[in-house]
Image (cartoon, rainbow, N blue to C red; front, side, top):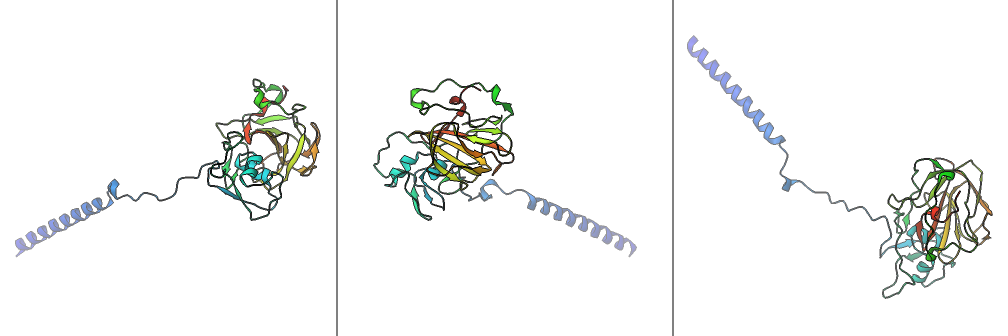
Length: 276
């Protein structure tokens, strides 16, 4: 009887060991990654392009005009107004839809290309503020070669809007649409050339209190992050005239973000400003 009991216990132990081994093996097989063909791919859409493409429209908000909408979309206000059978200085109503592409068969006076410096936040692209670059002073800035006649300066020439430390430079590759000049709160900001104020407000996300000045049919300048604006839309301004005071609205430090736009597209301001 003792021999039979011992044999039975050994067989039972062997059975328990085999059962345990099978359980581990099954568990290992279950944890093996599924074949690639069984992996569910994401249905998330691709990121929207950063620029405005045909088919887009902008919905007018309070305070918008053709200049602010065109600025965000990277087009000339004259072109956008024409695409909408209107005038660049026409008043717009909140909720109104603005076409950001030419009607079928329409011919533009010149090729219009969306700016690479904008980021789409709605139907009209919203622009992120210029990213800071390595600190350097304006005195160390070397101007770029003179531009061609097609990019000639407005009548009266250009001047620096403010003096200070250059903390952000233009880069088309890195989507930096202008330059950043650091300074002290309340420092006067001067218009860089003769022109007319076509936008003054705080409705452009990422720019804080901003002024846009039209100099002729091709050039605009932009002055952002101000603490106070001292001119209004429609005001005629002369080069060197105070138009705002430096601030840090929508910025992490007191600075002026300054852009020059040619046919709606940002260009390097250092190509136009006089040597410091």
